[in-house]
Length: 199
Ligand code: FES
Image (tube, rainbow, N blue to C red; front, side, top):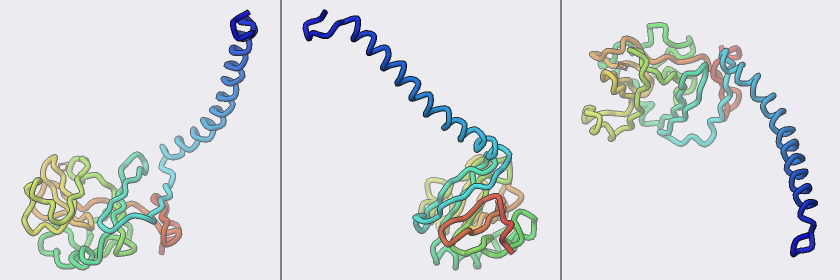
């Protein structure tokens, strides 16, 4: 018997019982959680579409999601950036997206369904590094031109892409960035990896 009047052996038993019961409780919680996660992880591994909430992405902000194990960027471009895209043709290798790097509905100057949002695989078409998103005015540390209007810079070998993922002339990357199949479910939700409803 201890000072507080509780039998020590009984307290030890209660503590042990509580631990076991608690453990069962945790296990019971964990098993269904894992059971839910595992098929989903498997599904993702084989390329299941990924639904993305684009509500809350600010102008000039880039959201990263994973699809088929690859980074996919969703960039919200401001009006000025969108307007500037039509003036870069002379500097770009494939300004009209003639090389098959995008679905038909993204074969335009914006390379997107809606001019405001770019959806693109964030892997350089040279050797697969992940380029940096460099906004207008931030080019100096990367040695980019003074008139840099924003875009993507791959530091591996110096490839440059504009804000539509179109490759500039004179860099190692041969083609524009890949636009994955995607579609809008609503104004604020898109799905990457499925464009069955897209005309
Ligand atoms: S991998 Fe991007 S420039 Fe080489």
